[in-house]
Image (cartoon, rainbow, N blue to C red; front, side, top):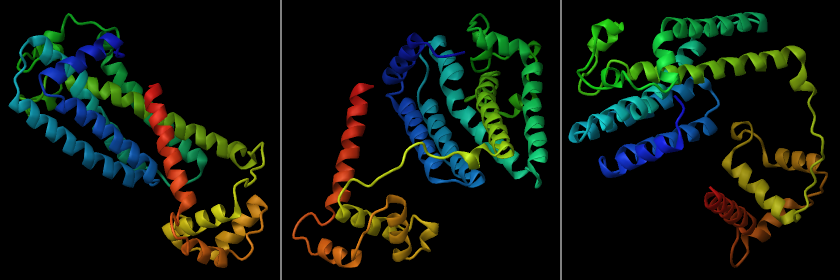
Length: 300
């Protein structure tokens, strides 16, 4: 079920008032942490390991928050287990599945990989086929069975319960909140697998290697600014795991930007000798980016 603006407003209200905003803040915090991991870590397996660790900590935190608070109405309880908790659990399922998929990925050419990812897509379809009745109930926005699906201790054996339900903590689980999480996670897994297949297709067709920029970049800032940036990037070790010499990076910059940096080492000595604002360009970059972020927040 897709969130409507009305539903989101209800969620925000409930957790602002009842749970003192802790759960909602934790979800926002978790999303920010996962976005950071996605940007900082390229290795998919390592990315999943870090993400799973963060998600487990978040789930443990909200579990403690829920144990200390009681829902005032059945509606509040249903809303939490139908809409909020699956937002956390679905992320755990997603990263765990991607971890397993990538760990089992076969070595071989693109044809083998395409077959492997296609088979994983078929497994997702099998889940939807087996859970078709509940999937249709959830996606259609139905609510008439919510009192059985999303309230603790209200399970109905006639609703085809999974065995795992009887192993769960009944104080923090309902009969179907995990199924909702699976639906949400499978949407993301499907997108991941389809993206992998597209990447393989691009490699097969050679499109990626043939793509060239339509424009030529020219450095229109000052040479001193570029030298300051050159030294900053070299100090941070962002190229070739920090193995490149300063001279190599300088020559590369001169080549791609078609600019002569001249005696850049002497220019760096002059930058060091500045009486104030030694990192003038880097500071300006930081201030400009922060201003852009602030303006983007105002627009949202």
